[in-house]
Length: 117
Image (tube, rainbow, N blue to C red; front, top):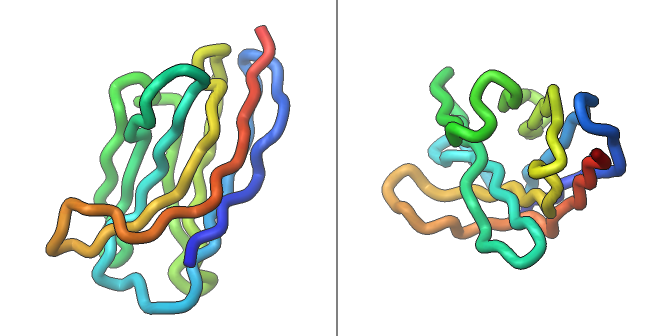
């Protein structure tokens, strides 16, 4: 089970940190990711991290501004968002897929990030 939190209203140029709490199973063989869905748009991949190794991926639109991290001891995944832009406004979801699959089996409930211009 995944639970996302930390969304809110922030001015353009500001920062926000999202948290994703992972529970109910071991995620050591999983890839943890953040997706987002803006109003009227399809859900898109933002960033991801391997649970057990220090390897990350970022969408081009957030490279250099967003940073994903994890705390294995707390079963937490974080998304630090800096230099936020109006176009970052979306519902952000954390998700997890087993390393042997490309299908995301676990999704958090989403947390709304609103960036005011």
